[in-house]
Length: 59
Length: 244
Image (cartoon, rainbow over all chains, first blue to last red; front, side):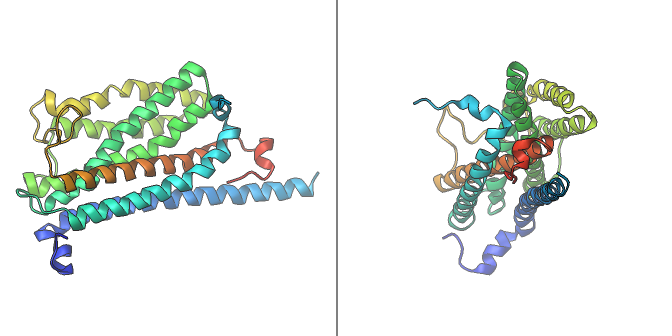
């Protein structure tokens, strides 16, 4: 382990802004992409469900 | 019995396969990322010159490698699409582009945040950094061109041509640090000689790159399913309850 305390870890030897700024933006980008992919999948599924219902109602 | 790989060249058969594989790749990416972050942030010692600022490397290098690699894979699928006239190849290329653009953005962003404390500048017009920016524009250009053409099959081909021509930029990015005098440092890891970094750092960097790779595969498989479902709307196999 390279650290003595949690506060030392979060301070990153004075580079906290640069290090955590990098990790935070990368995490937000990846979380955002995954959210967007799941959102689009859900929309498609809902639309397909509607189509299936409609085709059942009017054969 | 030989497995017929051509079977999976059809969107209809690839669709459920991609759905089955994607969660596994994403789970693997998560496990690798946790291991890589543990090694990189907690175990690896500070750098003797840069202190703890160097820890940006674990995302920067992984993202930069993937930004170039995804582009090459994308160009490969475009070439296959032209050669074999397979619809799925173009869909694969289109599915890879946003993830590639995302990694390129992350590489540039983390590069700026690393450049400021070590070089004293957020941005310099250095060959490596400028060519990486061009890569971002190529991804955006590919996606915009595709979106601008209404006929999907024409859009596929036009964007694929752009992707293939743009592939020349990838070796330029890679060798830029050798060909020109760049502020950006040269490669620390290469196939021909021993890496010039501590083994824990190297291990963490490689694990993070592997995580990024697995994530890219998982995310593009999810996206290719969306593209297939959108394009094949109304096709019988999709109506039959096989949806996402």
